[in-house]
Image (cartoon, rainbow, N blue to C red; front, side, top):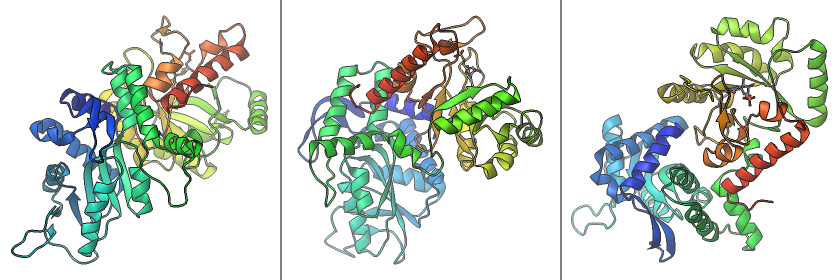
Length: 444
Ligand code: S5P
């Protein structure tokens, strides 16, 4: 899903008071420093359509299979209606109270026993509202395997529903919401921090045999705010170590051998920044043949998406059998880059359609919530600025904390330093500190 459209949606939700900061009481009676009230959506049809589109896009991305759709009453009801009407999907309505005349049905609409119903919800805290709706559907003989929610408060809903056999797919997480609002200067760092702390201290999910020790509680929340790198590395596609050496093909064969030996010894990956950008057949030869035989030693390569999906298919034909991965260049750090807007969106879609070989993006900002994709950002130096040829620099803090990218790519910031080892360590620490700040851990 496109990060830019989510970011703009977050700002619009804030504009219409769908997200408020202060002291508010939740349904559970708990006081909260952030209040999400998407009931206002009905007064903003453009926003309403945008949300409905995002939900449906997620349904497609996940490839969900179902026979009907049910919105949790009341806020998600009109959302479900829009989606079902636009895409001609059968809908069910869950009554909150059984009427005391006529059929006494709790679920309106036609269905067969054993049908699967997809649940749609606007906001999830503990997950109980979704579960209540699912239980009514179960009583009628329906199955519920998946639910989609626009806003996840990250207070245990995903885990609670998972423990009941329902996979929840959140579109916006509270940590992402805070990041975007803070970057747009809608809220200050202190507000963002106090909300994160509230979320951390108010996890509603207690696993059956779980303990309540502060350490285990903290760990649980940190993993929920955002999957850690090690968690993400366990996903089928990423795997392994993120440390890499970024090269351009300007070396001797002896150098390649030395680099391979070092990569093996120190367990890092080699990323050849080759930027393939030709038709499938040509890139296939460039990748596997020629003087450098890049595919034989480079674990990761990158490519421009401008030729269309053929470039990925050509590279994949060579790289996939060798368990290699490819990054697609979705945005560039250079001034006036044409890789922006609709182009970037199309690149993300191309990556999603070839996720068996594409492992992530070269980009300036996080573009998708799918944790298996890596975001790598070049144009990084300790001071923002640029060079005389259009390169633009942002800081590790900006890239990893504000833009939520995963990896910084640093060239001259290290290569032009008098002590390269010291400079590399400085960038490593700065990126890591920004990451810890992002996931709400204190710096060490
Ligand atoms: O958009 C981009 C994409 C890349 S891969 N902007 C970039 O600068 N790069 C590469 O990152 C560029 O080719 C160079 O190797 C590195 C940045 O180097 P620096 O010296 O400007 O940090």
